[in-house]
Length: 224
Image (cartoon, rainbow, N blue to C red; front, side):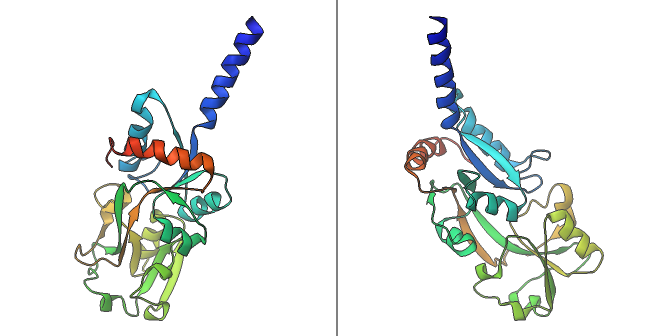
């Protein structure tokens, strides 16, 4: 009887673990980060706390790495973007949850320098971007528009480039400019370089199709 009960408990435990999806999450301080958590951390925690039943296991990586581990199927799902973005950046097909956010790409400069107020202000500027980001997303800008482009692994590294006068502008999706390193930047709210909707994206497996249905039920109750 003890062996049977132990086996049953083991099978229940394995079943529960199998239903938890590994989620690749791009690191961003004070938004999505294990040490300096923010809105996305709270959002994912709220999803997991519903019904006392955890369904997502977030794994945080720098942007380029977070994309790669998802492409390599080391994680089941990815936090952010949509199907067209997955095709453009990673050339993979995904299935997606309902939308939970809209992300805007901005041109950030340090507060002791002039804001970028229009596209033409970017001409001949030295640009820094996060690895994993690509100019293919910017329909109205090409690489020859800039004097130079360098890619770094984090917002902190981008800040150092600008602070040391090695770059002029940081092209970045929506960044928290009220906390952490973000307080050193400013931007023109009217200038949006591109925007996209954010979803939980997963590999198109039978298991993940069922998971997306379950996730969407929770997303109706939780807001970012």
